[in-house]
Image (cartoon, rainbow, N blue to C red; front, side, top):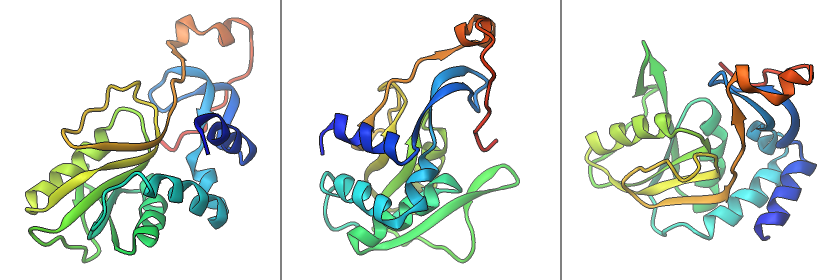
Length: 187
């Protein structure tokens, strides 16, 4: 699938949405990426993750993701790569491995996320992985919304780059038109 076909597929399955949205950042936009919709149907997840898998290095031992959005992504990617899948989550505001998850020094790790916007959560997970003495082979995401601003210091593999325009609330043309706003984010 080429970029246009991927975008069309994401529209069909309800990932790329049009409207008037208040993003988690507080900014407004006329587009929203609801990547959780990819994982509603395993066949959709398998289709998109398999496209990403073909771009990745081989011999990955473990996929590590930030909770909560990345958990299903990491699981599906690890299934496709036939490797382990674990995730990090916040405890008292600090990203950490819990639930008995461990990393072994020298392990080849891919950090994955469904959508990268600022890359903050990915950077926190990278810190966990490098602190454990693992070899980071790269970062993978289904969608990169960072506008090429996310720099992780390792190869960054993405299925799709999306440039989604955002507006400060006081400058939003959709607000000025009186279009009702939706806040679909998780925070």
